[in-house]
Length: 144
Image (tube, rainbow, N blue to C red; front, top):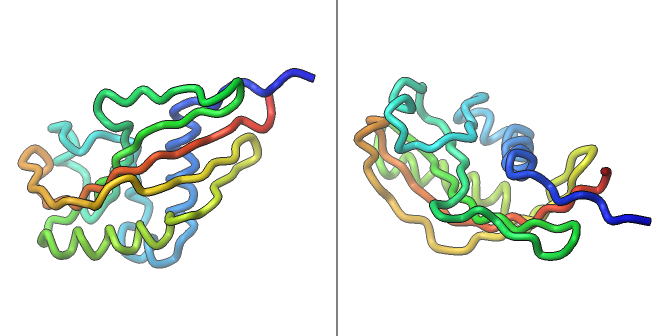
């Protein structure tokens, strides 16, 4: 029996996005605006806020833990046009939704763990405030 192939980066981000879309409190704040995108991108300024941006951490390409697991460093940015405080409030909801949760779909299973204390920043390109948190997701492909 061969081990399943390693999960892709898109699959890992998709697990996080799916989990957040399934949480009513997140939906009430952002609707479907949970994007696998870099909030520093100038085009991100055209996206309605509040929104959530999920991206691979700069310089983080992930690494194979074994023949079937992948660990991937992520940044999750909670964005608000209103204020840094509103971005922090959204971040608290996101953190509660993800902290210690198992994530799965038909082909993948993962665990996500927060790596660092969130920080506030102003993203001029996106014309918004952000609260950014650092995470590591470890994901396995359960079907090949």
